[in-house]
Length: 215
Image 1 (cartoon, rainbow, N blue to C red):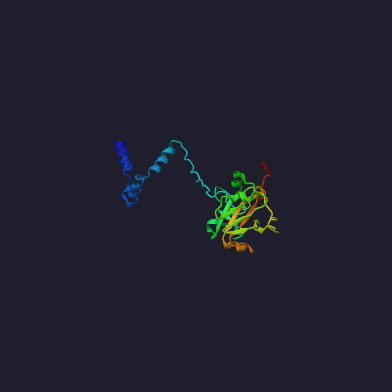
Image 2 (tube, rainbow, N blue to C red):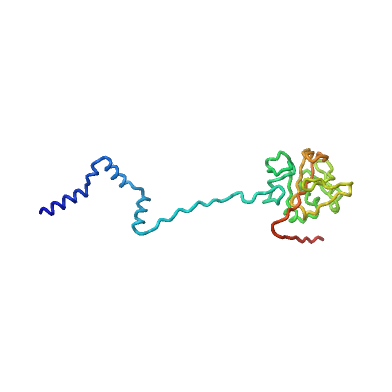
């Protein structure tokens, strides 16, 4: 009889411990009843022997990729960099001049055999003034002014007369840039209609070659 009475008292104390009668005890009891589902799930997984998966690091994607250089190949369908108008690599959208760029890929796809043929579809310029069959020299009319001098990498090619102008093969050119308007005076004695600047190809990190067949 005495033993059963003691057991009932202990059970009552365990069901209602004395520390719950205090404010701190009530707060602890309430917090235990309001555990978030994630914490309860973590406790259940730990009790069942499941290991919590480590959080994976976020994947960062570089949207810029390879940036175009003013003296390098054109990336994409349109050029975004040029050095003809400012003599420094500058985004075309930030250059307050009219610039047209023809890439080497476009000249290859069109089968152009001269710079004059490459400039046929550019605005503001008339090419092949001596006829389309004349490919021995390049002569242009840019915004009404005759252009007899061309540039290679920003340097004027040697010119001694009408039929003594040097000609650069399109296979050696990475891009052809047309600077239109009086901003061409940046290069000195140049007609105000503009100028033609050819950017030569740069050596690659790996060996490469090209064979062209012309008829």
